[in-house]
Image (tube, rainbow, N blue to C red):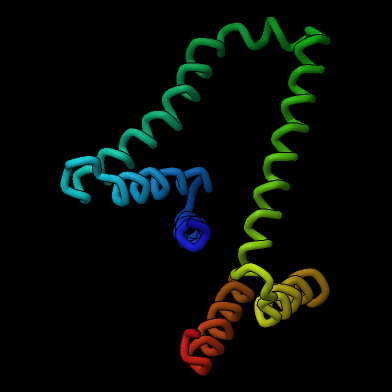
Length: 156
């Protein structure tokens, strides 16, 4: 669900380290919602562990198995072109994810526009780029303004 994905992304952003840790949350929530005969907490824990294993094991295998050969491949023009294509594809995936999350934040329900979210985002953007305010105070200020707004509105 988009709301749960936003929660997972927010949770992953609160911790130091790679953003990919949001995948643990996705594995946990997926198994929690579909435990297939197991207690939900057991299924969710297994789901998070499997997701973590599947996320990091291939990376370590590539590094340990391919590491010794990378210097030999560095001067290969075909490989350089392939890596450039992969880099471009990754940029496209990140852009697609940014658009997907942006649509869910700025238009949470079909056909509606959350003008407050748009204005808050624009204010944060201006605060960081024009006023040169560091990101931590902007995040804290945005959180305070957003929570205050929703408390005053009654979390509709």
